[in-house]
Image 1 (cartoon, rainbow, N blue to C red):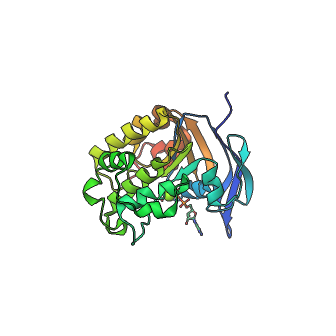
Image 2: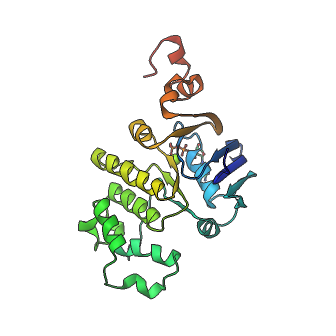
Image 3: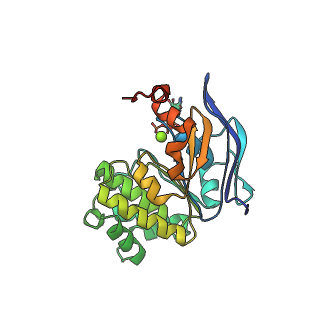
Length: 252
Ligand SMILES: Nc1ncnc2c1ncn2[C@@H]1O[C@H](COP(=O)(O)OP(=O)(O)OP(=O)(O)O)[C@@H](O)[C@H]1O
Ligand SMILES: [Mg+2]
């Protein structure tokens, strides 16, 4: 196996007596697009927080391209090449959609006063078009709808062409037509060198986008397989539907 871009070794996290992550280990190779699945509350967002420096794990190790970033602050993890989005994105009230995208330039080293420049930026215009945000480019980012904020957060994460992009439910609240477009955009990013870890509940999106899935259930990694194999995996079926399905009953 080639060297992993992202390697997780025995990551654990508890909130009080609640063990939310319990010894999670996984490897993601450069250029892979991996889905991170699991029922509600299984620990997916917590795992992303532990990887990206938003929540120090209690135990375990995270490396990006061999560099140990365990429990390093988020800005250090960003410098190591990781960009992420949030399940519920917050946007600033005093910046327009376009200015939020320009803020990606700060991470790339442009001076802050450039943020409010009025000149056009082809890459930003292309992202605004791609994510159907051109008509709200000059509105306060905080005034966007939930789905538009989600799109803006994905566009922003892509802005810096990160080495590793972690997305937390990127299609939640997004129109189905645009989900298909997002698959195309994310595959293009992968083709240009970005490795992706994508939390998602939409299985059609996962099948179209991902070559491999890892599945969490109550803080344990219970499967690592191709999307098409998930429905034949007993542990996955049981995690999602409960034991009722094994007795020939439907879970709903
Ligand atoms: N800061 C926190 N303090 C206490 N408990 C937390 C905290 N963050 C998460 N949890 C708990 O950890 C568990 C896993 O939460 P997490 O957000 O990781 O789930 P998830 O798999 O992302 O679920 P969903 O699909 O609903 O987004 C939940 O039971 C949640 O209540
Ligand atoms: Mg979540």
